[in-house]
Length: 72
Image (cartoon, rainbow, N blue to C red; front, side, top):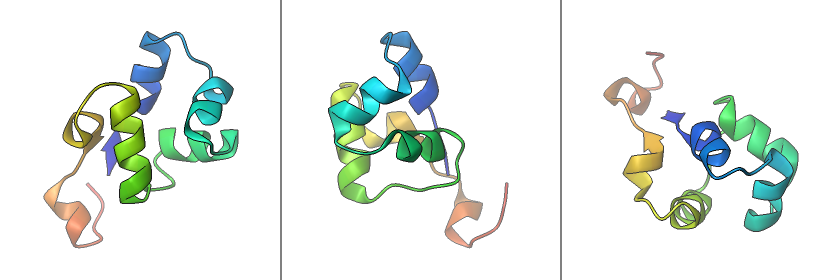
């Protein structure tokens, strides 16, 4: 699953640390999310989307192949 977190964070003028603090997670979690190494829980995805005033679908890009564990 891809996401727009890095783009949205930068548009808001937030550092990874600032975003991590707003979400009560570690900076490492933000790094992992931005690089696609970690898929968030539904709760964290919801918190991220709310922070940017977007829907989950506007932040996270789900591709059908992701459902089957296949790469793009």
